[in-house]
Image (cartoon, rainbow, N blue to C red):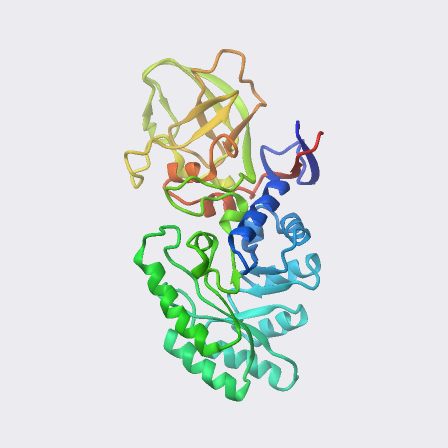
Length: 391
């Protein structure tokens, strides 16, 4: 691989039908850019869902080596897996704790639960009451997303109570922006103003509201800590703007067969694609069981905006549109316009990566980069590379 060195592998590449290449140097470069954009704020990393499907076992140490000391996961189980990889770092568990067994696991692994309700706070405090200790946690405040968290009024009231009673040791108070990828959306300012009242009530405790997109809203949103996720992995932080992030993941699948079909014949389930010319078809070995959404189908998807023609692959230097419906294990691509002999059985075709942007692929399927990334590692062999070296 010219210009890159393979540093680790997961899965057997000899028998893998799909390949996911993760550029760790690009990942680190994205982290450094986000850190620079965050100004004086600490820059954490969201590595939930196995680092968005790219493999926390490799991604997290790379970020740690680059200076990251604060990580966010979704569940206690994810935190336990992460702990030996980043010894000494703070690991926050976004889903918090719902029972005493979870509390015990998080205490043993030195995880920091994010408290989403007063009930969770009392659960965490009760667990520690007979054990002593600092009871460290973060507090999530819902400033308008209506997902998880204390209301603004509950959070302000709890801040006063905790200052007097020391129920828990709150290390961080945080909220989550709902529309940060749209800089002009009025909800951004509304949420920030609501959160300022909460942060003021908590006094010297650190505060955080900026996700990937929030970092690009400017210094007012950076506060004490930013929490990028999708932008670390190459996703667009701002809708409709040029993406400043480097692509990190390249998803490819092998071509299983080259077929020749006549004008008027149909392709794939439902016969939704009728060929308008004699067509050369590359049948590739990835489908929705591999996290390549059925909504990327070239036809026959009723819920997708009719203006979007479906997804494409990239092979032999050219775009190859999808023909017909994506199936469970296979997708058909139109390679008619690629010169004969340049595409062969066994070749790799890119589904997203440096030639087909992750977000463009997602939009073609009416979905988001998050879903594309978290699904694509199901059956793929992973290889981790570092750019800037000779192989």
